[in-house]
Structures are given as C-alpha cells and as structure tokens.
Length: 273
Image (tube, rainbow, N blue to C red; front, side, top):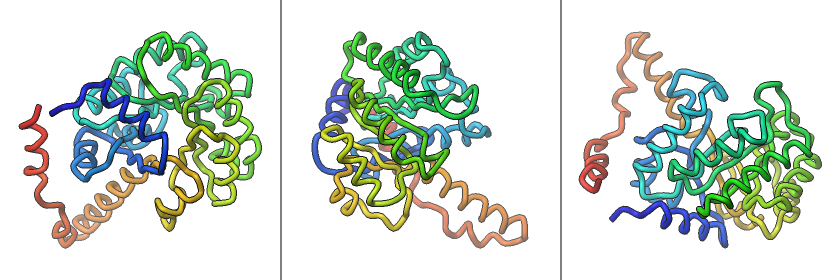
C-alpha cells in the first residue's frame, strides 16, 4: 500500500535520529523505482544526474524543469525523496522563499539549499547565505509541513583546503535552523570527525568521496547519512559510453552484460498504482 506524503516525511525525519544510512541519488523515475526495489529507505535527487538526462551540464536546468522532475519522482515511489534544490533558483531572498514553497508542494520530504552564487560565480558571503537559509526555514515553518531542511556549503568544492570556513558556515547554518548539514568535498576522516563534532547534535550528510569508504566506518565517525551525488548516474554513463564505443568499433560484446528482468521489476510498480 502506498505511503502518504506525510508518512514519507515522518519516516525521513526518523532516519536522521540515529545510526548511519545511505541516501542514493536517482536521476529519473526509473532509477528511483529501481533503488526502491533494491531496498533503500530513502532517496535524494541529483542536480547533475538529472541535468545530464536533459543533455545539459549541471546548473543548466530551470526551476520549473526541476519542480516537475521532483514531483514525478516523489509520486513514483513510496520512499522519502530529498531534493537537491541547488541555491533555491533565485538570487533574491523573496525568490528563495517563494521557490521553497513551490518545491514543498511537489511532495518531497527534504530539501537542500546551498550557498553557491550561480549567477556571479563563487559563494554567497556568510550574511547573505544565512539570510537565504532563514528565508527557506521560515517558508517551511509557515507551510506547516514536516519537510527537513539541509544547509549546504560548496566551499570545499571550490577550495579543498578551506575546511575552517566550511565548518564555520555549517555551524552558523545549524544555529539558524537547518535540520541537517552538508559540505560536499570533505575528503579525510579527520576532517569528517571535526565536522561531526562541530554541528552536533544535528546530523551531518557526507558525500562519498572515496570508494574505499564503508558505511560502517562512516557510522563509526558519527556520520548520520551518506549520499553519492551524480556518481550513480556517471557510472551508468560510463557503461553506456564504453558499450557504444565498442559498437562503433565493430564489436557488440558489451551488450552481453545488459541487465535482465527489468520489465518484471517495473511491472510491480504499475500494478500497485
């Protein structure tokens, strides 16, 4: 039986209270349903993975494209979906608030707002980033919906050595009402522990940076949730490129590695909806 949006939101918040869970990143309805079939407990969208399905680079999709994408994914699965909502698709405080209200209506269980200044490059300064986050917080509170707010700084993706400024922003975001904190690009276990302690007791999301990491060791470091960003989509693209390159060279060998049973898996979703 399908879960209601409210049930998905409650389940998502409960996941953040203890332990460490993986939040894989589907890029369309099919990949979202496959990840549900494989037994994951929640999902997160990926701005890059979705953009590539549109034949665009990351940050080149429109707000309305992303809203439609999120609504379709949220309706297609019984799992909570966390929205990669980039920088809120507006360079104004009012615009961020308006757009947060719109994304809540798609049925998502959580959303992230980052501090990247998409129009001008670089990052918003601390004061501006906080004002934007507080606008998102207020929009969620006024909606009356139990949507989890993730505050995200992109600083380490721009400068991998800027650990202290990234942590300072996360702490300020936590104090401003973020439910979960996220700084993609943190690459060492020592830095992860420092981040976990800085934002505690609020949960930290970590982007899997090293394929050698395990869920167990990240949990031991105090990480509450792990995501993979566009990596799953990139793996799919890599397999497609390799197979197509072989075909162009005259060999159909890679087609022998195709997935089987897809119709049977997806038929189950059609039958229950």
